[in-house]
Image (cartoon, rainbow, N blue to C red; front, side, top):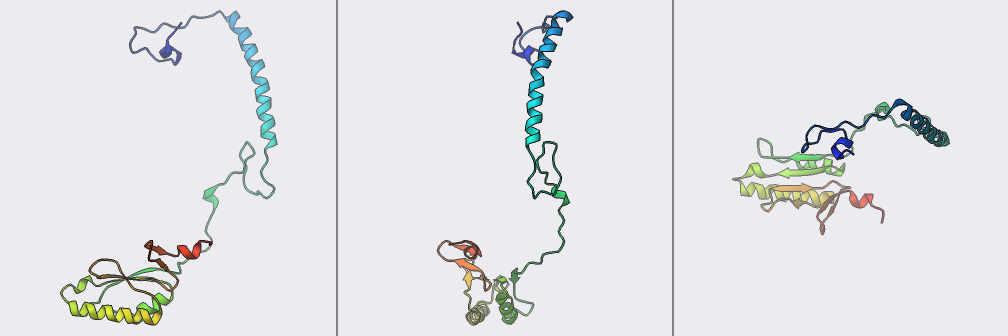
Length: 182
């Protein structure tokens, strides 16, 4: 009797030369082949019957696998029209003359865009930073949205869009409350 390595047809790493399995006469092998065919015939019939029982749903119009299952060919799906986003995340920083245009920001916020205002270029101008914060605060009050500081120095400011929800307790930003069914 052979070992485990011989069972898988691999050489024994600890042993010497592998011993080949004993050969049986051709006459002895013939009855074994006939019984093997008799055993496999009912299995083939059962598989064919189960394949015949499967059928795609009545609404299915696409290709079908050999087993009768619907085949979803993902490469055949094409997009007919381009979808343009309705909202955006805008990044605003002062221009070369250190101005921030709040009229354009308020238009974008009314459309639903979220705006991040970066006051870091005004590093050495504390009074100008305060003036920009005041102007942004009055613009937000006029539009009806809140303004949030994203850093401790209040140099990165977040102005959410008109339909954007900011959860103040859990610190969640997005439209999750609008999407959740309560």
